[in-house]
Image (tube, rainbow, N blue to C red; front, side, top):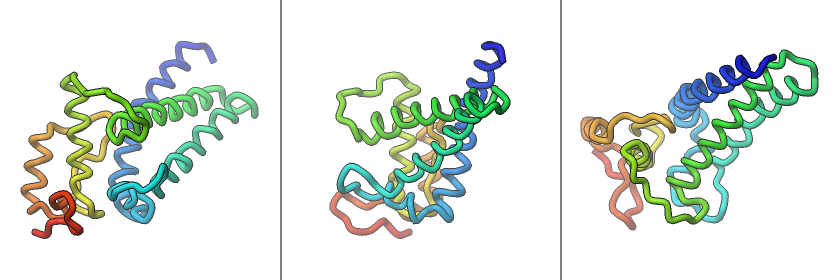
Length: 172
């Protein structure tokens, strides 16, 4: 495969992964996969949480597609798709785990309107500690924080984290 179609496939995969991530986060992680994802909505003790298994699970298709496209004689485009999935994973790790959750210490402070919006939207997502009732499931695109706050208010703030030190979420 020539580089130009490969690069286009790679970019399309990275962009398409945002839709996949939204769907997986909204209906898998906040659905039947809550048994792993719940750890991510609570204080982390140690370096890892059960939710980290999702990184391993989602790396498998990337690895298989890269291996198939490069070494096993599959259609070469699969390697570009696998690389796009891996690139999205790296972007996700950098944004979500490092910038937002500071799993690696840093002094970065979001200054651009885009980064402020994404970080605030993700924090509003984490304001809800329960499986249902949360907002903003994307990672690289998010609605305006005002819209998310209005949606939380409309829902009666069900499941919203209480004041620091509180043991339970606020009930409507």
